Length: 411
Figure 1 (spheres, helix red, strand yellow):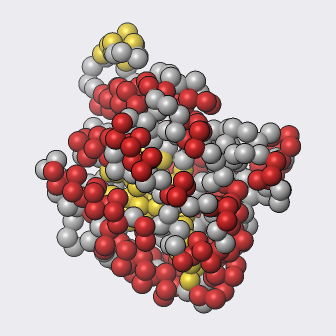
Figure 2: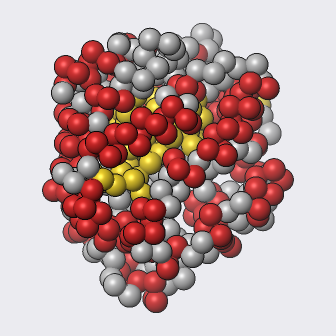
């Protein structure tokens, strides 16, 4: 099993009355009302420090992401973050997981193909190429993508990028949304025909079916925890079987918010304010920004209307204890968290854990302590899962070593 450090890089110091000032964490907040450029500069550097700390602690991968015009996460260009991580981790067996640049919002998408190829070269072939379809707020509002075109643009762009990475001759691309007379990409990625491709989604709908059809890795990104994911992952594995795919756990990645301390009581106390900050302030977004007509295909729209945790619970009313009991945030001693993660990993059949060890308003010192405890006390027990049964075909080839031995060596 591979364990990756995931980081949203949120604004960590919003005012206490933020929810009263604004209706949403996306689009609405005014920069000069709630933000400070010097603080943001410190956040960028702190985020890089925290991710690099995870690499030293033995994590198998470092994850970036991309969002726009919000306080929830503002890695506006994950390739900038990834380039620092790629350079600073040279000589370490850690993947650079870009989750990642949004194709539908970039014209032409060969620009992202170039950036990712640069990252693969800088890292020595350690890139995982993540391609999110993109949130409706990011694509439609922030980048003016026509809603009904978002998904077809994404799929055409991905096909163009993959061909640009591997084509042996100059070629012309004459698609519906992109027309390029001569494509001759410089540089090309070290990994050929292309780096492993991961595609995130929040549920099992057309995106998951598309990912399984391409035999790429599906990343289930949800903030409602492994405890609430069995229905989604069961449907995913049913879909994979119906498409003739094997049951290799590494074709599924899963995100979990985690806080570790010396005891259960300490963990519940120290992570409580940051969990409430995350769910009250950063996920404070109305449906009209996330369910823009045309952005979702019919199966996804139906799922959003019939099973939407944000609509089913009022996040702003949940206290830390509620978040823990519902499984949204997994906190506890190393033994408590370890036992839960091992059990849920087997139940969900996930081969990659995306550990969100910084969330909400957490300071760097607490984040690094969380990383250290996780890396020392928990990661070595997760790494051996699936190791002797399945090959991870969705991991950079030069990093495909026996993880159990490597994790125990780190410990």
